[in-house]
Amino acid sequence: MTQKAIIIGTGFGGLGAAIRLAARGFDVELFEKRDKPGGRGYAYEINGFKFDGGPTVITAPFMFDELFELAGRKREDYVEFAPCDPFYRIFNHEGRSFDYNNDEQFILNQIAQWNEADVENYQRFMATT
Image 1 (spheres, rainbow, N blue to C red):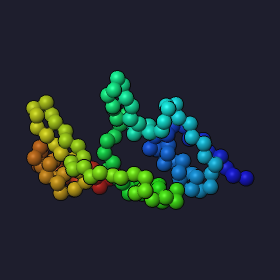
Image 2: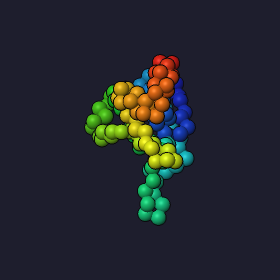
Image 3: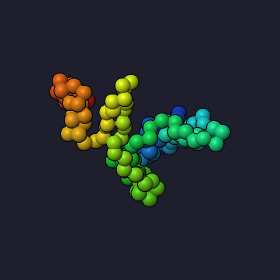
Image 4: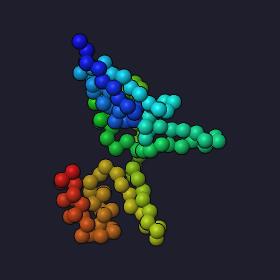
């Protein structure tokens, strides 16, 4: 007998869990309170203005590729990722900025511009996560 799984919420995590379970043979049923899936990836419109419900940058596209592969599909046939560099530009109250991308040396240089001592702390933090 096929095992059943119920997933509540169709954000990135819920959809990813559903794909993984279905790939293992589970009969998966998804429940979502909104009119369409997305969770933090949900986009909505109010008075003609469009808003993103959450992330606007995918920092680990390989994870999407893995899920599509588990579903027997190719991501490129459904979704096109557009490169974005930097991923984020963060400003403080003085107008100084910090850019973040996936280039380790670039990030270390950004950190050093703020505080040289934090470079080593950042490297230690990243080694544990």
